[in-house]
Length: 116
Image (cartoon, rainbow, N blue to C red; front, side):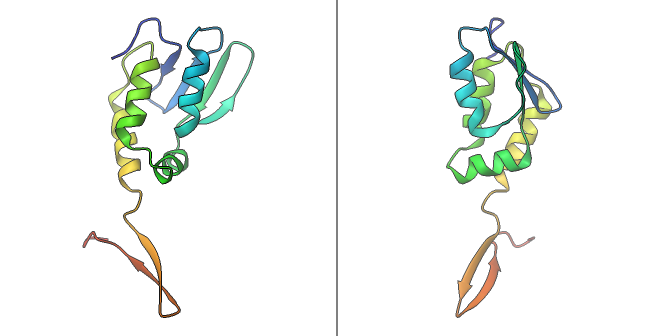
């Protein structure tokens, strides 16, 4: 649940504004660094962006969508936009759907999803 005193503002375009002077700044920064990229770091407000690649890297490290959403909810000053929730779930769910395997000296692309 959003905390009206949280250090972060999560925007629908997947950017996060993080207030540097907030007491929870360091904890929020450490959690955001797992799944978001630092874009700008002026003196008072740092800007992070959640990208497909940053979520892919997080998923490769064992992070699941619930972890990302929990961190956003924990530090967000306002409610996390539904679009952000949808995008995080969608991008992280793509991780591991295709696997490149070496079989008999040849690479084979495999998926458990018949559609792919």
